[in-house]
Length: 231
Image (cartoon, rainbow, N blue to C red):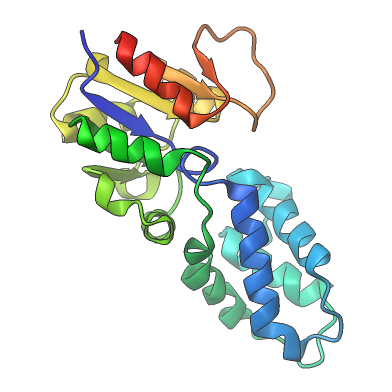
């Protein structure tokens, strides 16, 4: 059965998470520089990377329910402030500006334009808060390309549960076998999509190799075109 829909993970698939953190850190320092004794950009980036962990935060690093609040707490504790930073303000700063600082993955814009021109149905399937997913897609300028945007918060299901993939296919009006899913995580993205009956493509470079996975691998998004032409 031919491919009618292309589904994407968000972080480290459509957006480069670490480059986004770099841009966000620069913006945060610019906004708060008058309140800080030391303008240590590297330290700000290290704090955020430690807690964010590429969008997969470890429980021991989370001091609060969200990445935003945990980052705010750590920044207040670990940076050298001239005047004490407000916790709620720093937390809200993440929600307001992290999406605006999103950096597109190389080749993402051209790929989405091509897929739209060829009339593929397009969707995002991403774990996390729905408002945050939308903010990132807005920051990238990508929201207009997608017919469906599914978050784990909105669906009440998280990847790798196959139900979130099946829910997305149903929302697009296609069969799972007519879907191709692209993601960076070998379990949440690739195994989850495969269990739902979708074709899966692994965008490598963000997680260790897993030789047990029988799945095509790509290093750059533009390589996806060859797989679609075959299907």
